[in-house]
Image: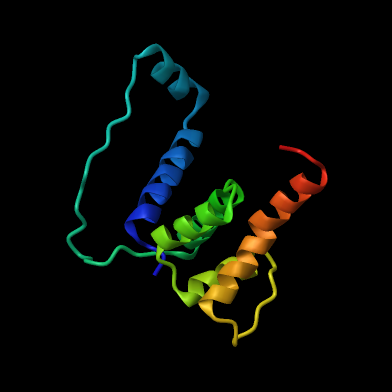
Length: 134
């Protein structure tokens, strides 16, 4: 499941940014000059024990993971990042689909990670090396 603690923080930040983007210019001006403030209140929902994941949140998670991967600069960073995420095979397949990376059902998790690395990080590093760009 994609909802581990690392991704939870990213999703909550995305929700906060979405909230800020929905504010009117007048509300933003009041925040800027200090006439208003944003408060965070923790309210428990009594009816549900499971944190629901809807399709839109899943897309946000995928986008944030792919964006983070594109910022990485080495294979070691890539491996460490994937280790911290704790993704399952179906999650890796979803990432491959999101970036139009071909894979087969016979590909193991290591092969899927390698394909993601080659397409998202390795390509960038090889391009820099060819152009002699540090």
